Amino acid sequence: MVLLAVRVSAAVAVAIAVVVTLAVSTASASSPAKTKCPAPSLVGAALGLKLTAPTSQTSPYAKVCTYKGGSILPTKIQFQVDTAATFAAGEKVAAAYGTVIKVKGLGKSAYGTKTGGFLAVFLGNESIRITALLKPLSKLEALARKLI
Image (cartoon, rainbow, N blue to C red; front, top):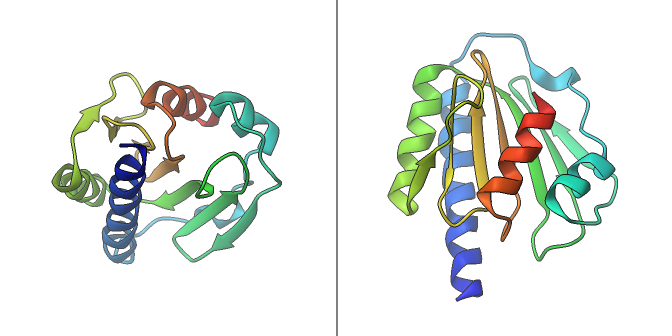
């Protein structure tokens, strides 16, 4: 059962990343590349994990912070340029892979997977996407609130 949840969550995260990367290339806003990766102590405390210092990858439209430790797959936090349309497209893709729950009172719009492991928060011209497999949506939401 756990292995199935990992596969589904991983598939959702990959599908969303592909759609958003393609859609974001047309967005026009400043790059979040200068955004600092959150400290591993902050991320780890919120998720109940012991994490290593993050590595990061940047592009003109996004910064991805990757933390190892505590899980089969690394925990990722992605800051990216976004629009309401591309954010909605990502939500639609996530819904095709499993049940998506709207998260009220977080950013302008937010959704996560019912089984946990993924949360996306739209802030207006940027979004934050958190992937932490096997972590409940409530923990991802608590982390997102610390990041915005």
